[in-house]
Image 1 (cartoon, rainbow, N blue to C red):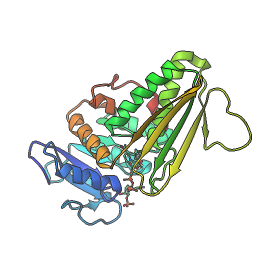
Image 2 (image 1 turned 45 degrees about the vertical axis):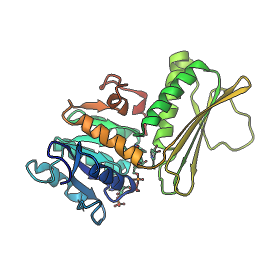
Image 3 (image 1 turned 90 degrees about the vertical axis):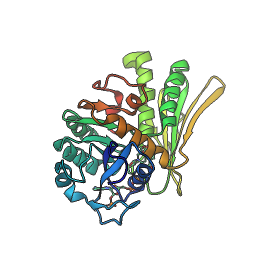
Image 4 (image 1 turned 180 degrees about the horizontal axis):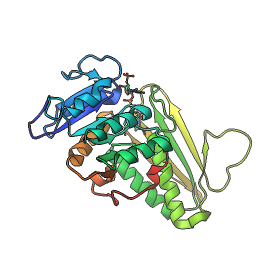
Length: 284
Ligand SMILES: NC(=O)C1=CN([C@@H]2O[C@H](COP(=O)(O)OP(=O)(O)OC[C@H]3O[C@@H](n4cnc5c(N)ncnc54)[C@H](OP(=O)(O)O)[C@@H]3O)[C@@H](O)[C@H]2O)C=CC1
Ligand SMILES: O=C(O)C1=N[C@H](C(=O)O)C[C@H](O)C1
């Protein structure tokens, strides 16, 4: 194990992936968290000096509460199927869960919800503090100019699987949530992905555009336009360390909390009722 004896001990899944590696490397530089266990589906060399075990052994390793591999919080950045399986395994072992995985469908989200009845579970589609600020700015902007057209564009590296990104889906839910608050059941929320064809934009449409190119870490733009003006709100992640640090902040914050569903805003002090159902329950 790395780090201080009083540190929150984490188990990292997907340790061989882009984010898993980043989390282990970021943890090595901190004193408040320590990596107790790292696992990967396929054999992986040690990451930042941490041995990587076979993910099939996760349940046994987590259940060994007195062992070296014991963890307080599982930190997961993998894929939706594995994230749900790992979360269920962690819940069975009484280990809290932070997942940054994106692309969950409604059934998978329901299984995460069920796991959160046994242990604290925090899910966030983006652990950058700037994205938390972007979300607040977007909600405020949509409320201020509710009739303006909205287009959401995200750009990511060529290795990303899910499209649109989890963050884009969160932003779309934020826009829809504000419109619903303002217009009730009359609110229009028709998402048009990668527009093509021969028709003008229809009222209430929200354009969604996913670009995949090179090694772009992650960019999200929300464009509002109307009344002879445009407003563009954009976040660009400089590197994956931004996400890893946010996830580790979340893990340190989550350890020892009551079972339930938590979001990154709770860590940042912007939280809603931890048990409340939110638009984020939509597939992501
Ligand atoms: N919330 C946030 O702030 C962020 C979220 N993400 C999300 O994190 C996730 C991972 O991203 P990234 O690290 O770039 O992806 P990578 O493809 O680099 O890594 C994925 C990791 O997950 C493992 N994995 C994938 N599918 C499975 C499966 N079915 N069973 C077991 N293990 C599996 C891979 O194992 P193997 O090596 O065996 O293939 C690998 O270790 C994505 O959903 C992404 O959108 C990414 C960045 C920030
Ligand atoms: O896969 C990625 O890389 C990222 N995924 C997250 C998402 O889907 O929004 C967050 C970030 O944009 C990077």
